[in-house]
Amino acid sequence: MGFKNFKIFAIPLIFSSLLLDINNEFKNIYANVKNSPANKNDLDLYHGMGVSFLCNATRKGFDLDFPKTLNVASATFASVIEQKHRGKIIEKKKEQTVNIKQLQFIASLQLIESALKVCPDNVPEKVEKQFKIETERLKKLRGL
Figure (tube, one colour):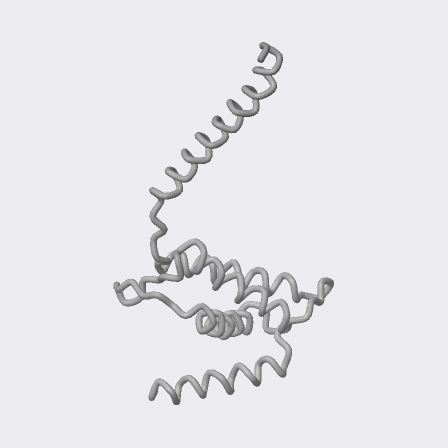
């Protein structure tokens, strides 16, 4: 086997080895990162971003469908909690794992409530009526 054949096999092996070493370093770096549960500041930030998106996307001139935009905003909120915080939040100074579907539902209600304050003209009457029905139902379930 000549030097030419050696180069043909050696260069890809060296390159592969280098990539594996780099990949292992990235794994070690990410393995040591601890995702903390979402605290009040995190939740407020994500909520504010969701309301801003919802109000901006449904204002006159953009006229995106409010229910679809709300769904995107609340799904994004829940997804960030799931991915960045491993589905955990801190509530009443205690770490809790949340059900993502329930979190998305609650986020939707909170986003509608905020939209009614920030950009009430963007919220369709049908959505506002459904919001009132759902919040009353939740109050009854909580015994308030």
